[in-house]
Length: 227
Image 1 (cartoon, helix red, strand yellow):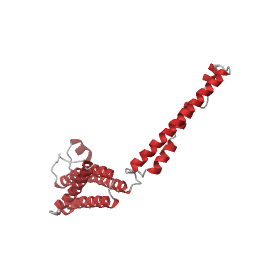
Image 2 (image 1 turned 180 degrees about the vertical axis):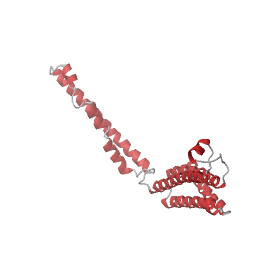
Image 3 (image 1 turned 60 degrees about the vertical axis):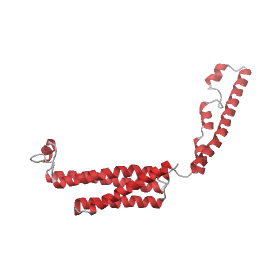
Image 4 (image 1 turned 60 degrees about the horizontal axis):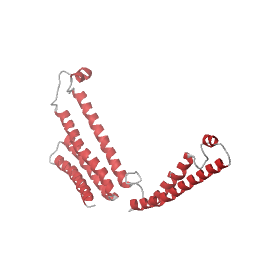
């Protein structure tokens, strides 16, 4: 509704600006003919760049007055959905940032354990950090690496789907529940995978994250297909 109103406002402004443009050109042309009729050399008029009415900068300023157009449109349109002024997008952006930090910490955690346990998969790492042989089956490092891979497999769909879901203009409360539930389930998955090493809770937390992604995907498709 707000987009339609804004477009109507913009359409109303354009004829007014076009009228100003035509008036400016007519004024400038009339002035040029008057100066020629009075005997003023044409070269003098050209050197002056015509008069102020035909100056391209003045024409641009009159017709493309972006401040006037944008202020009029802003008066009838609400804030952009993909703006930090929108609480829904702000929640999604914050969640995306936190998930990005989690992935960065996963990488650092993997590297730290590789160095401490002397578990390297390339010869140059052995030379740089010490070690006797290439290892690819250390239980601790492999568990951390699999946890990291599982996070990526779930974080990427969530970030894509949640940001696209903002375009459907959902309620702020719904999005807070969605983002909060996903963060809790993924944090629980990490704890049960690395710390507790517990089943079936690891499966439950994994299933919770998948359920959130499934909900977002279904709601997004419904919004697209119902239009």
